[in-house]
Amino acid sequence: MTIHIVDIEAVDTRYTKQWKEYLPRQLKRSTNENVNVISGGDTPQATTPGAFLNFGGTNVYKSKQLEQIGEMFCNGKVSNGDYFLYTDAWNPTVVQLKYMAELLGVDITVGGLWHAGSYDPQDFLGRLIGNKPWVRHAEMSMFECYDDNFFATDFHIDMFTDVFDEDYALDYDKISRVGWPMEYLKNSLDSYKGMEKRNLILFPHRVAPEKQVDIFNDLAQQLPEYEFVVCQDRELTKNEYHNLLGEAKMVFSANLQETLGISWYEGALVDAIPMMPDRLSYSEMALPEFKYPSKWTEDYTTYRKHRGEVVDKIRNYMENYSDYLVSLEKQRKSLNKDFFSGNSLYERIKDGR
Image 1 (tube, rainbow, N blue to C red):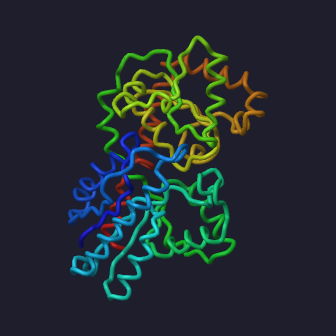
Image 2 (image 1 turned 45 degrees about the vertical axis):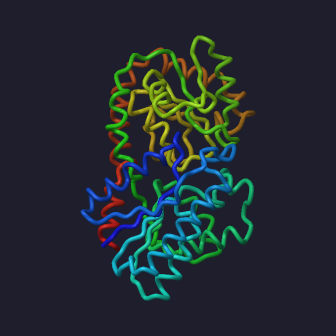
Image 3 (image 1 turned 180 degrees about the vertical axis):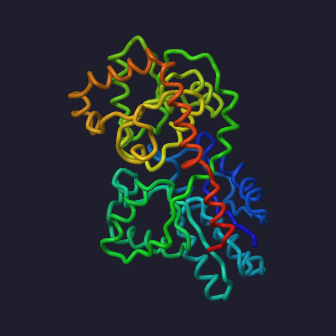
């Protein structure tokens, strides 16, 4: 079997750059199979504001991937038993992949990792396109093309199925919750753990409406004794960002959209206390010590009603920082095992369904 990775374009400041480097090696080591990467070439680094990719550039990238896939079929480079892994399931080229495989009689298995889509009202597809028939039919067509539809959290699975179960007969056997293949982070962030901490609180998320950066900015006014930094405003390199994480005592979220949460995991790896709302994927991932009631930050109006409670909780974390380190170690172990290890993903691929 050859595992063909149809990858997601890499943005230097995001985890997608690391996936390009680490995922092929991890798959090769874990499955002992040949691994072939189907890339779309250079990636536009200027993402569409508020998004994690470039809306025009991503389609150029995918078109180049489709061209390579077509040439592979023409040249007999795809064999029975091969596995195609799309690291972003929202890739319409999977439809043409199935077209070629079935018409040419090549028995392949296809898996895709779902990150977001129109079914999430807080995602840019949900906000800008919503439930228009074309996008819902397109997402369901892609879902049907995949033998394995991979999701990182039960929250994400529930959100997906709640939308599509109403109009489509979903095959739940095609759905799996697996950890995302990010075990490399434990080692790559080792050098940032143990750095001297300062009274620094980070907002490590994209600046987008669903991330509610206005709440964080107001907290900076309420707590002048601490330094508050919106990371995206600094245009940091990965190394600069990780240095800030290593120095920070806390990372804060008031997110209205989160199907996993890589940034708070990175923070936990270097002893930055996460403060997360009890909603979204945080509910199943975070220990009780690191969650606050969802109603405190459901929007800016409710935040103002509960501002005093939010401020008090931040002060408690900051002034009693060392008291939380034992719980933070327990949190790290849970995240490492259940959400940021690709072992279950690799086993599914190796089994070939």
